[in-house]
Amino acid sequence: MLKKSPQARIQLIGSLFVLRKGYLTFLLFKWFGWLRELFLHIPKEVYETLGFIASIGLVVSANRFDEVNRLWPILGGSLLFGAMLLITNRLHGWEMKYDRLFGILFLLWSGVSLYYQNATVGFIAAGAFMGMLGFSAAVIPCGYAIGFQDKNSFARATTAGFILLACFVAMKVVDITTLQVFEKGALWFGAFAGYLGILIASSVWYGGKKASYVIMQVITVVLGMAAIAVGSVFSIQPLLGIGGTFFVLYLIEKPFEIPDKSATEFATIGLGVSTVLGFGVWWAQNHMDLVRPFLLF
Image (cartoon, rainbow, N blue to C red; front, side):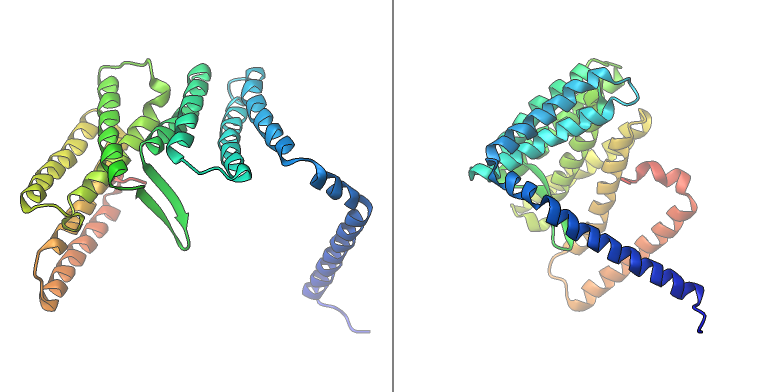
């Protein structure tokens, strides 16, 4: 009789376990298949209503939890309500208006964060506010897309991002804690939307006259230096990290905007930028304590 190796025995046991699960699944469908038919005959509006009730119930039930465990029903209920708004639009075939969707979520999440004094929900409320103004993020095949819906929302969201950022930086500097639950989200989303917008607006490919292009370079440099200075002096990490990161991206982009480049000139610029960038990465890796505050992640 041949002896089986330990690996063969493990494979045999695994195969038997898989077969057992398959048999059990088949029998469960055989015995309880009528439940599936029952669920299919229940109107979709019932599930829709139950979803909204569950989301509100989770948020309300957080009063029964202590401070440590309160986050999960609050956050779960808040996110479930947002998901149910999307499902409702899909079920009824309504036109998706993201500004209204994010506006509703901003009001709801703001109320929840203020009532429970929860900074996590305050963070996503700030994100909903920027989404209401046109800032968006989406998952696409093999990547992510972060930006603005159109030119109107681009100008609106960029301006609002800097206003939001300025207001909460000022509140942090003078130590006003009235809206502290929104501080992290407002600083993060305000800085991200604002500096992403200014990076786009300062690009030669965005369009505009030569004079406006020069003005945008001055504005971008001033705002970039301001992010580093204010973020460093007052220890505002989102401003320092996001503003610093986008300012580095701005400096990397500028050499490639030199007009009328030949292939040789383009290759020379690429070699120079890659050399400086490579040296910068090497230096940063060896001085991470100094560099870390200026990184987005």
